[in-house]
Image (cartoon, rainbow, N blue to C red; front, side):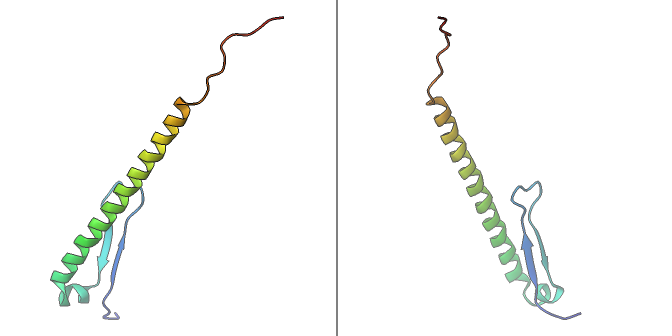
Amino acid sequence: ETGCWLFIAAQHTTPKAPFIHYSSPRLVRESKKDMEHIINQFNQIFANLLAARRYDAREIHGKLLNAQENKPKPSSGCKRA
């Protein structure tokens, strides 16, 4: 046991569950209100990052669809000699 103050948070980029975090017992014991605030801040940060990622993906997908719609269509008839 080190008795250190430790906080770790992680979020997968394609979440199927909320982010995970760990706070050492000493950190929670000595700063419970601050830890609640920090955890809420990390939750907001991760939510913002995920929303930005989805926005970027939607924007890129829209550009792809637009490019596909504006692509010249091949002629449908075959010419025989």
